[in-house]
Length: 487
Image (cartoon, rainbow, N blue to C red; front, side, top):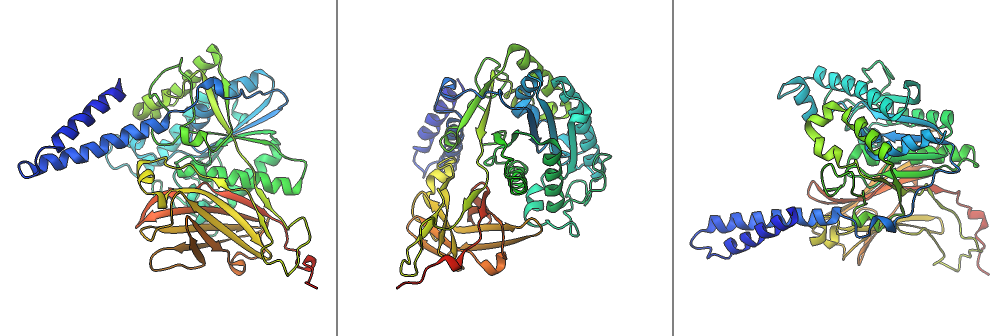
């Protein structure tokens, strides 16, 4: 019905816009703007629906798993994404643990509603974090969890991307623009600095303590920065633990919360299926997890425990009360090594290549219209002792946009960051070729890392048009002495 309404409105706008511009130019101009808006919303709704029925997705089986760890960037994400899975895991006797990483203390609409002030104070935002802590305890108790099965880390809402990129070191912590704090002001995890190194350290500690064999986390392509950054932290932590203990290889699954107009249809529809957006469906391996009638009812009760969020987001939150949950399998770090066969110096084209890490395409109207800004994937090449990151776009690279590569390198003890960009006036360390951009990594700036985390962005001025998920690459040492000289 809503879709039909949009189509009728679009037809009306076309008729109005067809009137002679000389007689009513402002009317025609307004009609064109409305037409673009209606077209955009209709296209976004189309993308939020899946192109496959629920029956096409395999069922997630819990048999064989013993310990489940669920990570949530904010209070309520764990229930929206995995409330049914948590119940089923507990019923099957699995050990279940939930980690809520931020205090959820930066959501301005909720702070306004709770404080009854149009301009909430820092104290109001802290009060919101305290309130959401209590709501989480209530909601998770309804799912069957006890306080000792939950970790609240109290990091700043909206700040995880800054912890990952700008504020890694604990001696220069991130300052929340909401609470005005640089350390956790809450009784849980009190005094911990807002830094990337501290968050990674705590995630590693939780993994080593809980030893989960099934980890559920935010989707790497989720559009909320706390969500996609937490997935990068978690994948790195798991791979660091795998380096210490090669037998440790848990299954990683992700849930989606923020992605355009997902989920569709909006609202409380417990009989409907929850399906992945069509563009994300095409780049991942998705599993459905059916919910029983009891699990469905309990999940709704848990969601309604988040009263502060219900006041401002109720239809959206209840859109996750569906007869199933959806999870996408997540790959861990990809490994770049040396060529298995012998490399000779007379073979300048000897290359080690990783499979392309795909990125969804035409998943926004602006990207559909701007193929040169629409990233289709990242590829990593090692050519002898040189590492290249290749950004692939849907059509030819264009000087109308700027292209940015962000790289953070890691060893178990340290980290560095490096970036490069290509645009009309600056083309440092990059070479454009058709629909690809080749970035030569600066090995001196990166040091001698064990891992690289890579993402790419396209921009028009300061507006980000497209951004890939963080791609974690595990590096094996270069073995230059194994390169055989030509005879």
